[in-house]
Image 1 (tube, one colour):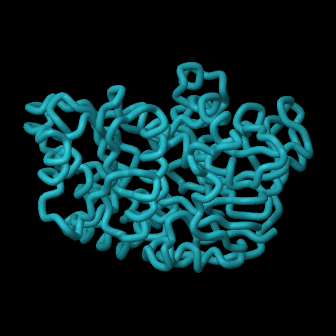
Image 2: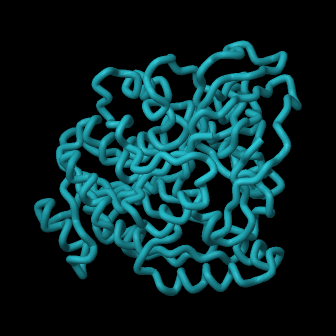
Length: 394
């Protein structure tokens, strides 16, 4: 089959690889009909190459048609249309029972001290072949795959794999009061969807922060107030002036480890990519430093007693944080990988509804054939050609 493989920094290629097959009775094989390029994939494209090997298949946002199932998979069968969550979780362990599927104890990568295994995401999370391919082996398929109805286009359901549950959790974790205010830092796919979910769940004021014109314009079309980082030297004061001088009730950081405006962290990340892989991996695991521009701005912006929700991926171990400010302002922090299956029952009726309240059907800015994946990665990483969300069609 054809699949998108990692070959090095900013180097992904579509190659022929072995077809997947059933290895465990809880496996399924899915013929992929659509798959997304995620902002998290760009971390592999740019900074986390020390945890991935040439030839590894990328991608963790797939959906498609079931081709084959193992003996213990009974809730889906060949011919069913399914979305595959990026978490690989069993559904019956201590963590899954508590709605923490991203910490599943059955697939937890204990050798690396990490949570549940993920599709297409490095040795840290199980080195499981991903979904940017023609076919996908789905472990723990007795629980993970989400059946969806036939009829509507893939774009209505594909984002159940990651984008919508991640945004939903970000908003829930943000603890926005009814009619309250929230600022969303970063208007990539997760930030855009977080704005839409916050509006749907009753936020009174949603403010989006970015510096890419196309991203700002997309948010504005959905009724989001925006702050262009190119127009202000003090984003915290700008947003506080928009929220009665005290700041928003909640802030969602949808940027993560590769924030703009963090030159020291950026330099540290770039230098790490120049080291031998074994050395770089050890250094990142023990002394990694994130670009903290978005998080520091979130801390400065949120009102006293407010909540910051982190959905952007962070991977540093020595990140300096302003603990005095966090303590003095009595800020609450919540964060973590999305627990996809925890939120599906709330979300599926929305993405299936005729009125499409979250705007999933026109969310993608680019839909490309799988063979053009390298171009998709390039324009997404460079923020060129208006690329906000890129989908691939095998």
